[in-house]
Image (cartoon, rainbow, N blue to C red; front, side):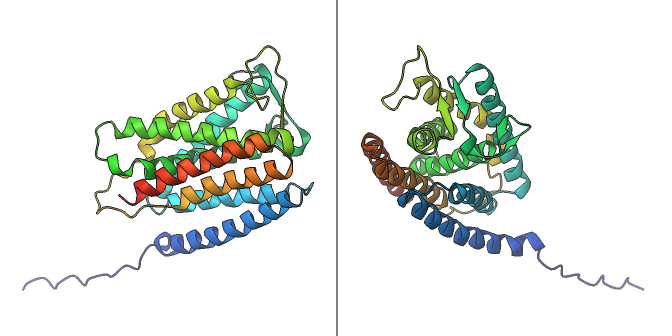
Length: 276
């Protein structure tokens, strides 16, 4: 007597597959609201720092949710953890020794500190800046993604965009909000009073981070050509726009001009690459 056929079991989709799109759109809505709150805060020169803190929290959540649509969640969380760990460790080293960024101290305005040393915002800032800079670099390099050296170009351009983001951040964080204070003596300075070693360090630290996290950020599943993702570009340009508004309201016009040049060039190259 032939064995009876095994009944087919139709499993329901994983909860994460259903939940992830909702989390993504929720995070996008909250991100837009947080940007509006931050724009209003810097526009009226508010002394409160809660809009910027809220924006950083939502931007971190939104960045991870957007990246999780392309990669396994465990890969995204692993990459975020490594970036936060390296960035936090080097900032603690920087406060203690001035290496690698240059001599600085954190101001009281930056908020609560972990273990009385590291501001809670530091690891989240590194996650947002590095992952979104990588997303912008992917847009710019989209026409050349089939090149053998694409991975090296992606790492280098991500580090460059991270460095440019920090250049736009410095007038806002150091001069307007006083989140940190540069105690530079005998250092080669930029016109904004920031040591050049800081920009070099942001570039090199990002390269170090990507050397560890790039394997986790590679989509190993073969799929059709994906549509360009403008989410990182929106966060990247929106943040620099925020810094520019703050610089303008405080009379830091050289910073406004530099930020404007950065925004225009990055937007042109990213949109051009995305349309390829």
